Image (cartoon, rainbow, N blue to C red):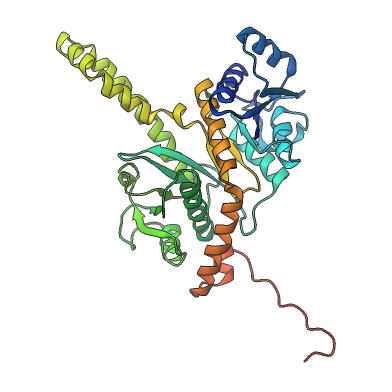
Length: 358
């Protein structure tokens, strides 16, 4: 299995990518290709004094910057991101991982791979910690303005990811809303809820914001605007609580002693909410495996993003998503939902009759 890593696109430069790739090769026994400026990458490899035959380099003349718009990034035909994505298109790699800016990554993946049948726009599936395990939030930033059929597709793809990669049997799906009652929510939620009930998914109904972290759902569906707010709020809250605990533990001798006694529990909590343990989020709906890493990913996050990519390849994620979309769309139409509502497009015209046939 070969995974290509855009080693130049992150905020911290190529060093975390090189270190994370080396760690992934050793720990997960995978082959990693670093896409980037060869001279810089070789210098970092030499400095690390690490050698691994499973790690190689493909040269790229250019770099997609965080400030580059998706349109500007597409003009950079020889960037590390463009080359990495194209390697998957040509079959030279099984998946791509990049900490580049999300809009540029989306643009390159859409242009190079296209969408799966029945999908107009992709979704980002991000994992958040819960009281029990982790929950898939989909979408967390790819599509900010959604239609009901798109949320249905997000639910199908998120459930496939939860089942195939996370090992959840019959994933429990919820629709994020302001109340658990079917009558609550904005127009989008009110129209999507009854459609989800006709998919055949294990749909449990609306989920409130507090329900995300209880572990009662495996997948929570929302539009990308709401999902990204949830994601960034959760990240900020986790950092704030950790810092508050540290400060309070230093206020007096008793709290310092209590903090020392609580250290193992605090360390375990930090591990559960640590983004670096998750590594990256899959882009669902495109005809290829793309794992989006945070721009400020350290070597540990990069290593785990490569792990997520490898797991997605091993479990044939793209094929499973394609099969599930076809299956659940068919079930919806059998339950009386029109083709136009299911797919968001008009039904295909009937085939013309052959000459002489009445």
